Every structure is written in structure tokens, then in C-alpha cells.
Length: 161
Image (cartoon, rainbow, N blue to C red; front, side, top):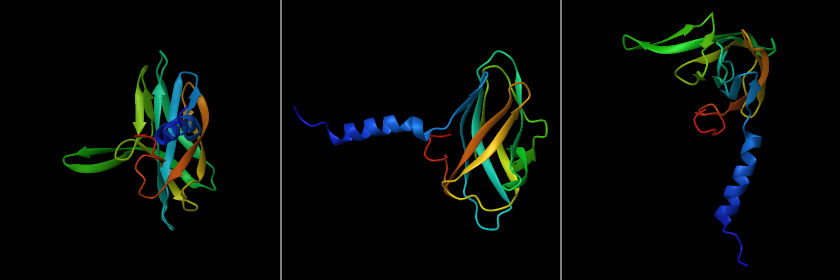
């Protein structure tokens, strides 16, 4: 019997490790995929958070807010970035984001995102920021935002999340 090719062994190990790397959450009909953030430079007063929220149910819900410990940030807001008349603008979403049945809301760089404001300390690569996501119907969901490198684009290589 011949030895397995090294590439096959590596592929199997990566496949088996994938569930341990992912951190998804489900509450009722809501599925939350991979909350992540980027490391922030020393002295930064804001950071951003990203995630994907999918409503797999048959009724509308609303993603109202995100909260973190006061030791992390003074406040949080949900924001949207959009190009208006050729200018990129960011605006807060005080009413949150409606999640229609079957809808997926992607909070990602350059679009919807969570703003962590009045940071009490820098976010460091590899740490996990505990947060509570608040929904109108589903209630509260405890999650952790995994902090990626400062220039990280997709949060620990999770293929576009």
C-alpha cells in the first residue's frame, strides 16, 4: 500500500479544521456568520466590525444594535457607506437594518458595518471582542468579533466574509 500524497493529507486536515476556525451563531431563524474586526493602531478612537446576518425564517426581523462592554468602547453604531454624487459617504442607521424573510445582510468593508466608537484600547490581532447583537424579534445574541490584522480584508481568511 502506498503512502497518501502529502497534498491530500493537508487538504483533509484543513477540511477537518475548518469548523474550528469558523464561528457562526444561530438564534431562531437568524444565522450569523463570522463576526470580525481589524486591529486598530494605538490611539485610534474607532474600529469597525463586520459579519453576515441571514434571515432563514418566514417573518421580518430587524437588526437593531450591537453592544459591547464599556471597557471596550464607549458606544457602537451601525453605519452604511454609499456613493452619492460620486462621493463616498457614511451615515448612521439609528433604526437598524430590516431583515426580510430570505434576506442576507452583509456587513463588510465599504458597505454596512458596525462602528465601535470611543475605543478604550486598541484592538489586537487574534483577540476576540465579546458583543451582543440585538434583534427586534429574535432578541439578543452573544457573539465574538475575531480581530484580524490591520490590513486584513476578510477576517482570518474566511473566504469573503
